Amino acid sequence: SAVISQKPSRDICQRGTSLTIQCQVDSQVTMMFWYRQQPGQSLTLIATANQGSEATYESGFVIDKFPISRPNLTFSTLTVSNMSPEDSSIYLCSVLAGSTYEQYFGPGTRLTVT
Amino acid sequence: RKEVEQDPGPFNVPEGATVAFNCTYSNSASQSFFWYRQDCRKEPKLLMSVYSSGNEDGRFTAQLNRASQYISLLIRDSKLSDSATYLCVVNRPYNTDKLIFGTGTRLQVFP
Image 1 (cartoon, rainbow over the protein chains, first blue to last red):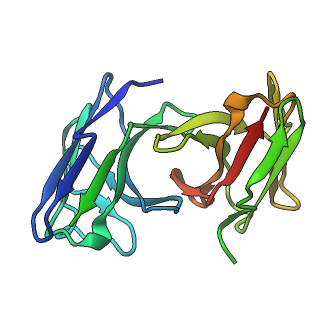
Image 2 (cartoon, each protein chain N blue to C red; image 1 turned 180 degrees about the vertical axis):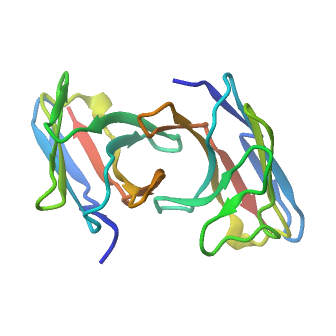
């Protein structure tokens, strides 16, 4: 499976500010995804990060709030914009492994908004 | 009805016990099924994919019943290190790349 790293691992931010989270994979992957896991909840897909084109967002998530970049096949960023305490969550990137539809996750970024 | 439904637990079992988790999914068009394990404050890790014929990996056995839209995970000879939350995951119908996660079943194995 791919080795995935995320930066930062955690952060505490003030409301109204923005945070950019980086996801780096040690090999080229076609599909990368961004998820959110709110306290005590399961994972919710935010968007699919598409290389060379705009991300595809799930219902309830918009580009203005969660802009995503995917400049190449090993890297993606997710920005959480104009943060509020409701954005406090763990943000995880994942990659799709080959043809088996198995996904592997980065270690996550724990965000607290005060 | 939730797309993927699991008993949240917790299941508290002694070491050496056998424990079974169940999961139901709502859309019969789902094609891929997985169990993930998530330790506290960690990312989910793939435990095993679930195949139509059922599959086994050491102490872990997964079963799929398409007719009943039901997935199970059996853990034999539980270890303390098995304590975690187990997530039932299915792919979104007609969009095989995207996954739907259950809320997880928490397992606590005690000495």
